Image (cartoon, rainbow, N blue to C red; front, side):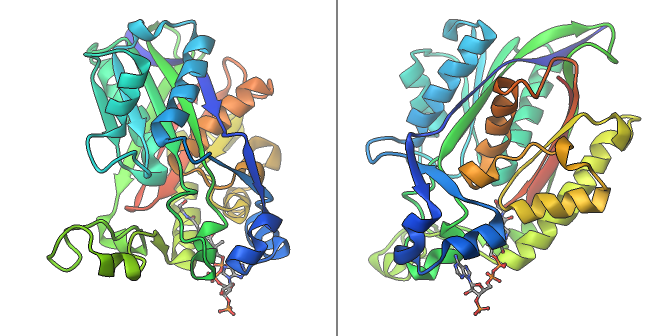
Amino acid sequence: MSVRSKIIGTGSYLPPRVVLNKDLEEVLNTTDEWIQQRTGITKRHWASKDETTSDLALKACEKALESASLKKGEVDLLLLATVTPDHEFPGTACFLQAKMGIPGVPAIDVRQQCGGFIFALSIADQYIRTGTYKNILIVCSELHSRCLDLTPKGRNLSVIFGDGAGAVVLKATEVTDPENQPHIISTKIHSDGSQAKELWCPGPGLALFGKERMTSEMIDDGLQYPQMNGRAIFSQAVRTMSESLTESLTSNGKALKDLELAFFHQANRRISEAIGKNLELDDSLIHSTVEIYGNTTSATIPIGLDDAVRKGKLKKGMLISNVAFGSGFTWGHSLIRY
Ligand code: UT7
């Protein structure tokens, strides 16, 4: 008998404002046709001007706690992944914790970009396996719309991102029948910092010119906006997520035929299609939300999990694999008996 983590609730929040591709055509010098052809994205959600990353996170957490039938006072650890924090410091998890009204509970930010959910899940799983914590709330929240270069210069990046938050509640559970009982079977995380600048946001940053973290010249140069070598990232995403999905199964004595549903970090539908083709996965095994939510970075997988639960597609007992790849580079998997 071993103590393992079990997902007992999911929640997500997408701000109500929907931005269609055609709404971006003039400002970004793009077309609905280009965006759909190159990415599969048709629309995304954008937060209102008075919402912050911790506000989106709060709404997703409330829904996840409700679906888990857990009171906020029962949470032992709060993990928040984001690439778009409320402030430089302290971490957004602290702002969220204050909004939740649970002082004293450890609140940790995970800054692993699109890999944020897998990294947070892996950290949480270790705390549960060691018996340190029993109830862990993980939330991934992103507010890209106010961080992007919304001029034609930024169009390659600005068309793919959307705002949103997804949360899961983990509970410690005694597992006596690992083949059937819901639990996280394994997580594996990887990083390669040598390629950090292929997808990064240079400013504010002390390593820029050895000056202040942010100067008006840096702003004039647009260094506060993310920069991406799209083609390089695309091929790395396909390779690493294909390998991670295979690794999630083979390292646990499973095969592709055992897989019942897969959740990829989704930046572009063509990436998921290429992974599917590489591994000869049936389309029905890949749960996709990029078409309607765009790339919500760390939040993509937990939003997808919640979406699949609420649509009745993800059911208790199913074997699922989550894989992510993103800036850092960071990537990895989790294999779960849901
Ligand atoms: O979530 C983190 C991980 N991120 C990813 O996985 C993203 C991976 N990369 C991608 O999804 C794709 O690289 C993008 C969708 C971002 C871009 O697509 P692409 O086919 O790689 O475009 P590109 O940047 O190589 O540009 C090709 C052409 C260029 O025109 P020329 O030089 O060939 O005349 C661009 O100027 O497409 C042009 N272009 C656009 N045209 C209209 C780039 N972005 C746009 C746009 N609208 N939004």
